[in-house]
Length: 155
Image (cartoon, rainbow, N blue to C red; front, top):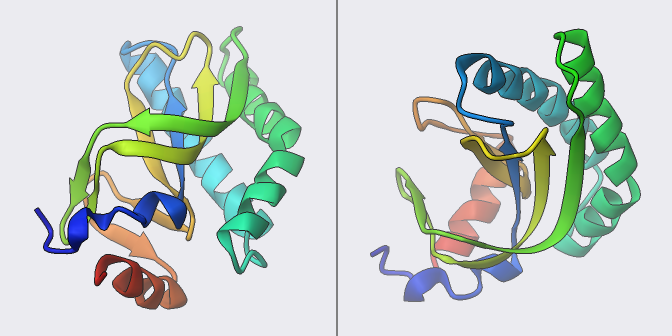
């Protein structure tokens, strides 16, 4: 698909993040995006000093309670009575493609944030290196991330 040896080692280099809404009701999907905005700002700050995937993974584990608290606070602020829970570990994902970046199906280290039951559609990005996607599919990243991604995807 991408001419890069199926990116077999991509899962060894990234940590994905998924925020799963309580349901597909419009209000649950809307609050998911509010949680996303608050969480990505929080993680940008918290992971700013992580230079390796291992550093980022350890940091994410150490702040998992803060992630849950942040998400639950956003839910409460917006009138929702369900909470959230976070799982940090291995998860299998389907292939996803955004422009030139293809994330093959496979098992990845991930942060899974369930809002309520977590049965609704999800939003995703990459917690490390910090790479997120806009609703239009545009890639949003910091300057050094582009160089790292080009190195990862050129293999």
